[in-house]
Image: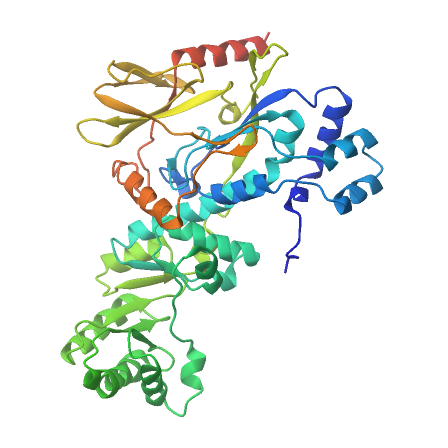
Length: 482
C-alpha cells in the first residue's frame, strides 16, 4: 500500500527532471510553452472515448511541491545543479490549464487538456496528467460500452479484486460511474466519491450453513429489504431457485416485502435466467430481480440479451476495471507552441513517417457543432486560438490527413469544448459533483448519432481543422521537408 504522505510531485518520469535541469542551465526555464494532451485511437475500435480524471489532475496541481526529502534525494543523484535544486525548493505551478469537462465524449487528435506554462513546469507535470487522464478515460469509455450493451438495465462495477492496485480499484469505480454504471462493489469508492456501493453474498456464505435453505432464510431475516440470494453454489434450477423461493415465501411474504432478487455467477446464463424467471413468476415472485456476473463484457452482455436472457442487472468485473480487451488508452502529451520574448506564439510540430503521429501545431480552440434541427453533434472543429466561429454561416471542413474528404455544415450551433481550469496557477473552475459529471456525460452521449455509437465499424466522426490552422500545419510540414 502506498504511504499516505507520499508526495506525488515526484511521480514523474526521470527525464522530466533531467530536462528541467537542462532548461534551467540553458536559460530556458522561463520559456512559455503550450502542450496538448490527446489520444490517437479509440479503444476497442469504438467511435468515441469519454474524458475523465480531471478532478485528480486538479488535486495534483494544487499540491505540487518538492519537500526537503525530495531535494535531498535529487542531490544524491549527482546530476542536478544547486541552482536548479533551489528552484525546485520553491516550485509551484503558476501557469494556465484548459480542459474539456469530465464526461465529455472526445475523439482522436483533439486536445482533451492544454497546458500553458513555463518549460520546466509544463514538463514536470506530464506523467501525472497522462496517467490520470489515460486511466480514468479508459475505464469510463469501457464502462459506457457495457452500459449501452445492457440497454437500460442496471450495471454495477464488480472489479476491485482484479484491478491493478488500490488506485485502479478506487478511481476505476469512479470512472465507471461517470461512464454510466449505477454503482460499485468497492466500499471506499462510495465513502470517498459517493459511488453507491452494494453487494449481497459470496458462495462461502451458503457453504457456512448446514443447508442452502438455512443460509437463504438467515440472510432474508437479516436483510429483508432488497435481499438478493446467490443461487448457483450447488445446482441453480434443482435447489438454488427453489430454496430462494422458499425463503422468500417464509420470511419476506409475511412481511409484505416483494423487493428481492437472485444472482447467478456461472453456467449458461441465457438458459438459466429464462428458466429461473419462469419458476419465480409461477411462484408469484414476478417482481424478483435476476442479476448475473462472471467475466462479462459488452459483447457477452449484448449476446445474452439477443438470446432472450431474462436479466435485470449485470455485475461486470475484471473485463471492465482492467479494460481487458484493450487496457491502454494511449493519450500523449506533445508540444504545440512556444512564446518568444515579445509574447508572439511560434507553432511547433512533431512529424513522423507514420502519418497518424503527426501533431496539430499551435495554441488551439476546440469547437463542437450541433445541428439546430436535430440537436446531434455534426463535427468537431480545431482552429487557432484567435479565431472565432460564426455559426450563422456555412462552413466547409475537411480531414487534415485526407483533405479530399470534405463536409459542409450549416444551420448549426458551435460550442467551445475546453474551459479554463487554472489561470496563473489559480483554480478558476468550479468542480462539479460526481453525479453532475455522470448526468452531463449521459446527456452528451445522447447528442451522438447511433452510427457513431456502434461497437463494430462505427461511423468516423469528423474532427477537422480551420483553413488557417491547416495552412500553418502544411507550411510547417513543407518546411521540415526542405
